[in-house]
Each structure stands twice: as structure tokens, then as C-alpha cells.
Image 1 (cartoon, one colour):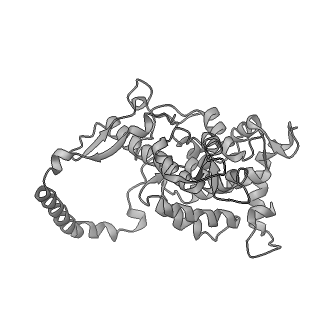
Image 2 (tube, one colour; image 1 turned 135 degrees about the vertical axis):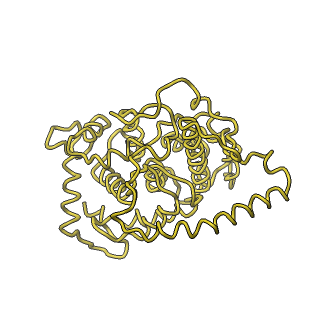
Image 3 (tube, helix red, strand yellow; image 1 turned 90 degrees about the vertical axis):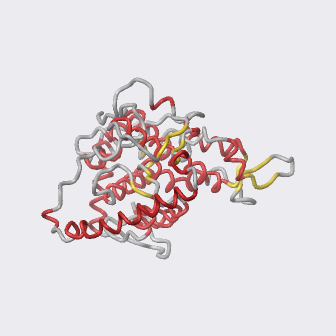
Length: 347
């Protein structure tokens, strides 16, 4: 438990009473309220699923898990992207005209927005219900077993089929902070907000310094793109997974087999080879290529994030029959157009 609140500049950091109560409550889920476990002080996938089904598990935290897209990444996934409608921007003068008109409209709207800014909190319109703001990045319904398995694979850094209390506590505290920073229950946060809020977090319960230190990596992601909890947890845990494959002589390079093994574990195994080849760095004595793992990871996670943002916008346009004038979705992923249920949230 002390590792979950450790500070890098304090050799014997302690735990406060409020944080102790918080982690002790989470430990009860991990221990399944005293039920016998397959392996002492550890949980396997089935036991992790049981902890999520516990009636005392917070509905707010479960809501964040329910809004994780059930995306099945394929080669066709990364062919989809959102772009401007070129026909509408065929000349430079036309683009400048549209830009000027947009700017003038913003200036005119300042006066009308002034009253809204002075409204008291009590008079503000109600928050939009969960899930009604933007559709999720998939049409597949939520599946607890698949979601739990994906989360468990990221938590199980050494792939032995078990997670210990530190793995579970790290995941639980990350989920708690994600929910804390998501007051509108959108199920996703921008990279810019994540970088600011995680790095500067100093409240209760206390979290370990690794979470704050690793959160600087969000600054390398497009600040305006949204990340769901799975991507957030992956970014904050990738160092522990990669550590099992690194060598002392070259702590930044991985062979292709090792890199692909890690990527399959965290839903990045379908990223295009052309993208990953940008991160080729060196050859060993046998002329076998090696990759800069952090470069490859950041490029791959950004591709996943870009697709999910684009897919969410496409599903929102489709389900709400929106007519877009200047935005076009190219090479739409077939999985988004197949007959199926609308995004559901149940378990």
C-alpha cells in the first residue's frame, strides 16, 4: 500500500488516514471480501471480473468503464480519417473568405454570450445525460468480459495470468482520478486536460509519483484529441510493461518481435508498418533492426486515438442524422456501417 503513495524524493513516505481508508476500501474488492483465492495475494482474470461485479463497486467508476469503446482494431481501421471537403476549399480566396466570415460571426456572438457567462451556477442548464453528448467510437454493445480482459492484460505487466495488489491499486487509483477529472461523465478527456490535471494533482487520496511523472507523456499527444480510460491507463502503465523487455546496454531499443509482443498486449498490434518504420533506430551486430520503443508507442497510441475520435464523430453524425458541409469521412471503417445495435451501456 505504501508503494501506491510513494514520493520519489522521500525515502520513507507514509500514508495519511484519508488515503488509507480509500485504499483499504479498494483492497476489499481485490480480496473479494475474504473469499478463498486461487493464488494468495493475487487475482486472476475471473477474480478481477468478480471484483467489478461487486454491488459496492462505484457506479461512477463503472460508468467510465462502460463508455470505453469496444473497438476491434484491424488493418482497415487505420485507413479511416476525417478531412476537409476539398470541393469547398478549392481556392485560396474562397478559404480566406470563409475564415473571415467565421471570425466576424464570433465577434458578433460575444455580446449574446455575455449574459450566459454571468449566470449563477444555480441557473445554468442541466448537465446532458451520460452518453447523449457524443456517440461512442463503435456500434458494438458493451461487453463486461471483453472490457475486463483488456484491462486485465494491461494490468498484468508480466503476462503470468495474475495481478498483485500494486497492479490493482495502481489501476483503481488511475480510474478514480480519471472519473474525478470527468465531471460531465463523457467517458473521455482531452490530452491537454489529462496532462494538466494528472501532473498537478496533489489532493486526497494520495497517489504515487509514477502516475504524475508518467502523465507528462500526455503532452506528446495532440492536445485536442480525446482519450478514454483504457488509453489513459495504457499510457501510464507502458513503462512497467516495457521494462521486462529492455536491456541494460540499450534501454531504449526493442527488437521487432518484442515490440509486436507488447503491442498485441495493449491493442496496438494492427498499426501500419510504414508508421512504425519511422522509429527504426539501429542494427545489432547481426544486422537485426531495432526500434525506439517510446517513439513507436506514442505514434501507435496516437493512431488509435485519432481513429476513435473520428469514429465517434462519424457515429454521432449517423445516429443524429447530421448534414455536414465541410467535413468528410474518408475510407469509413466497415465495422461502423454493419447492421447492429446502437452503442449500449449495460452488463
